[in-house]
Image 1 (cartoon, one colour):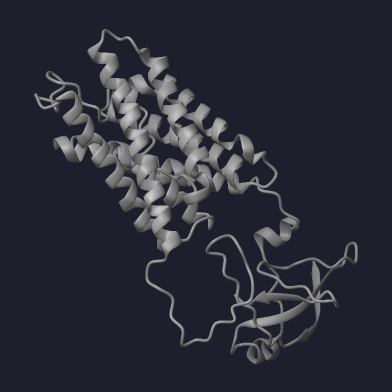
Image 2: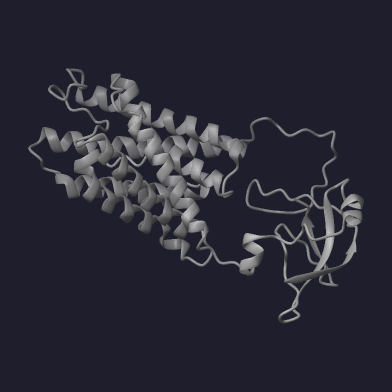
Length: 323
């Protein structure tokens, strides 16, 4: 059990701006307003559009070529096209937009606080636009107009269940979980070698398609399925390719979050100790809901952080928000 003592009010406040990965004091006056859409954000949206367009066009073109020219590409070849395109786009655009190219990935990053929620709608819009225009380009290039949705005429480059809906849902969940788990591991954890992130993520896409492609199409990406569906009007069972990847990505991101490196004790993670201050001190700090605490572990007499966000001063006091 921890003992909390030396409680004094904290008045100094610091504002951190982490929009572009940096931090520092905010010295701008309250009267100066930020633009609604920054140049940096527009660049990110363009990057997401270009990356998603390239991914959908290349991957789906491989499917069309394979079916048109006597299975010349084969399933491993199609998987390689998707994986290599993902890898190339990550190394090309990752430093601009983060290389999501997938609404499920954007939502999962936001849910685990690795991406601002306010940017998610813009990212999804750019991704859907890129996927839809890529599908339209494929329709024009390969003249895919005849009886596409019935699968009896021209080739449909969208996704559809080849097995039961249950099997499709499960496979899409597992493959998207795998993808998001790997993305979280190699792209967001400082302990990983970030220079190999594109290779690891691209290889995961290849592996997922090899065992899942014949069953569900291995979408793992709502934009990948929605774009062709909008162009050809094929909406049957489309919900599977929206709901399952989002749930899989959320689960993958949250699962890896449990494996992240932390200096907190187990007790800190499951139960912060900020609520163990007196009602008087709580009332004094209620204006800005911040208290300064010194937390001492009775077992080893070492100070530890009771909650994040924190700010430790030279007296080893800890700033923590009241619940």
